[in-house]
Length: 246
Image (tube, rainbow, N blue to C red):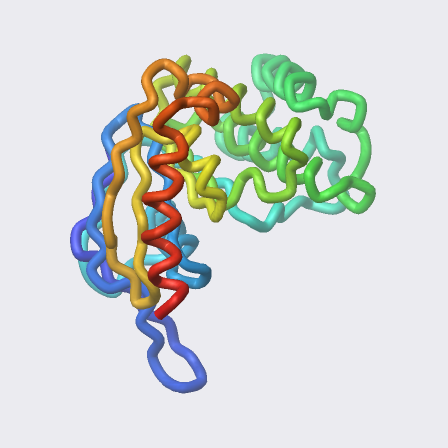
């Protein structure tokens, strides 16, 4: 489970203290997928940093139950290690390299269409390849809580749908708690049990929208065909558009 209560966060700026989050309260049940959307620069990534334990909030409380895996926007790959060696790095640091980890890695590389590129170095990898690799690195640590910051932004649509199917299957198999920050409303609806909408900075939780599209939610293509999909999209878009017009 994840729970924040009245979380406030500010940073030092050239003009003084910049308030980013102002009283953010949310709750994500164990085994639930939550997407966080909102205007650009409202503090979505800041909130993930707090949930990951990287940045302590100025005020408020944070509860995160279970081991956390965090996929940040920046790949942060080591240039002297191959893609496969970078992917296994988190598991190495936590467990030491094991045969089991390597076997799982090989399966992930194949599932993410990266098997033929496992021996290349980051300098020659595309942005989409790096993004898929960082997701593999995150999942290999076997976290109970997975935090994903714009995990599909560099992926072609066909590849994105394939990765989303894999992520849903992983979530169902391991009962992980997922929190996804995304600017893509369609992705948020297709993957999530609920969508949290943040306001402009300093951000509060403007509203939370439960998503109910039945069994279609387990397939990102079928989800987009759901009769309620357009209804949810319009509602979320109108909420975000309101902030952009302020």
